[in-house]
Image 1 (spheres, one colour):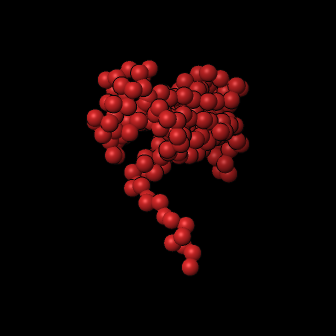
Image 2 (image 1 turned 90 degrees about the horizontal axis):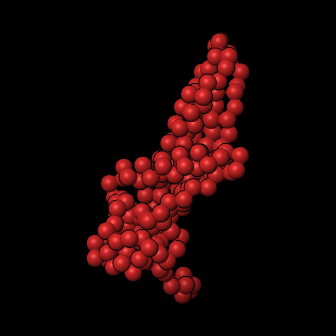
Image 3 (image 1 turned 135 degrees about the vertical axis):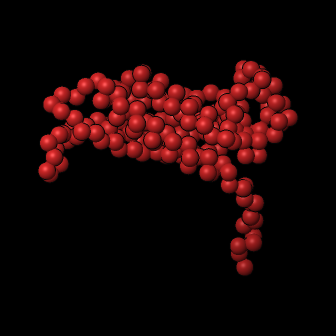
Length: 174
């Protein structure tokens, strides 16, 4: 849960959704990266005194501290890995990792859509004849970190905007 005082957020729970072929380890890494990235944001607090199972206590604490609470979910929309032939004048092939994801924050406990952000990253490194597990892990981690940071930055920007006043439909017509 994420709680936000006027401009601050608190994190309740975080979920990650990745296609079955990518596997659970990728989902866990994406989730951990999201939490780590949110932790770096100065306007976000990830710890509340109240247990998340007690929604009334969470509401009261957020109101007392002037926070807004959010529940974040990240969904991986694209996760591609490929080996490309060497570029002109180069000897080594390129290992490419593409990650595209979306981060959505809903108010807690109401569940109303409050914030969203998208991130996309393509990372390439030079490789020899074989792709090592370390190289694969390196490009995947970098691509995930970059795309999560983009999505969170975009979402935090949207959260920091002042709320607009609703306008009457009558004002627009004459």
